[in-house]
Image (cartoon, rainbow, N blue to C red; front, side, top):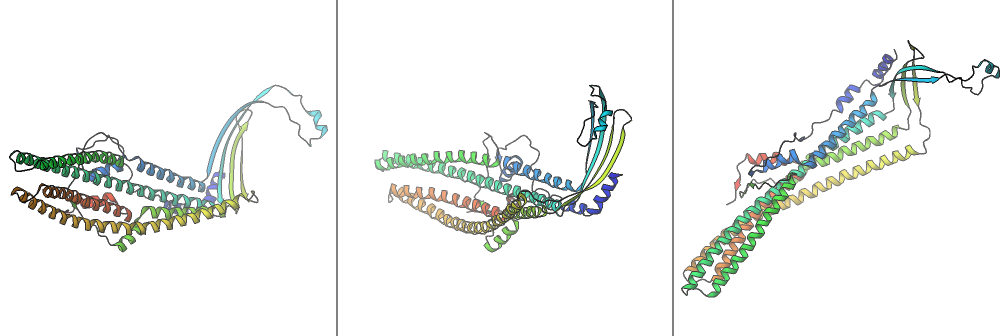
Length: 469
């Protein structure tokens, strides 16, 4: 009987529980990590494969997702306050039954008491208790809303964590590709200086070149070999950096895409700032955290109000079977009067926390605008560098052709030829650095706008790349 009464009261006082439960249904995470499989690194690793490994394996992203999943359970904890709480218990005692004298018992009654005895008796008991909070003046609903906003904030933060990790992978991938191309350029320079040394030695043997030309060619070859050693070390360290960016440990040596091609990115600063303010997960996370803190503030405001509840119980107890039953039903009201100003300070703390969350949101907005403007400037500068280094490479190639021709017919000097070769080697390296500088700047802009780096990489893969001549 008491159970049905409490359930009826629950339905009467909380008609919108179903709607509230639907409202707090969590959004689907951006990209939950897949079930971990054995790691297989292909001999040729593409950027898309590196990003997919990051999504599946990186512990920092897994940590963010598991934190969000833990926050999801808090929604259920908050919603449980709307539902009845039922408990059951049973016990058995073997105890004496001596009468205990209490204050107020008439002295004439003492003559009827049986003397104390060590004789003990069996005593059985079982109980069912049901409690239901009927009305709390907003405490339950604010806790539920706070949990919902906190969960949304953690999901947004997990998505932003993934964006940063994918940007780190793309940056490390492009750095490795750049260093591999620089090693190839360094090897070509070494081959050029070897050929120059052979020519100088041959001409010195027949008296057409001075000893200086031979020594100069040897010095140039040694410097080129040193540059090659440095470049090879850069490849090794950048591969380690890429493994770390993917969140894996492996000794597998793999190749990456090293083409000098790129897809231009629209660098309209005004448009990108607007997109960033709409898309950035960290801004959405800050907004949801502010809303969660606001609900926490309202919760502490509601703690100044009373709470109303219902209780019901059903018990069995006796010295022997069958047990004797009793039931009870009642109402409770709890009115806070004074708690040493605890509630006052809790409310003030919640107010300041809300203000701090608003400041954090504004700080993210300011940072977004600043980052986009800087990224746009970097991207435009990188594009200008590509065009300039292309011209420089063409000029250096032509200069070397002229210097080599003059040297072969005896009207040019070895110094001029060496300088032309050094200029060409530098121009090759600058073209590589300019193209990959653009790619890295593009990746930073994509991340700061709040676009999905993995989706962007897939989109570029399906487009025709603009090849650098």
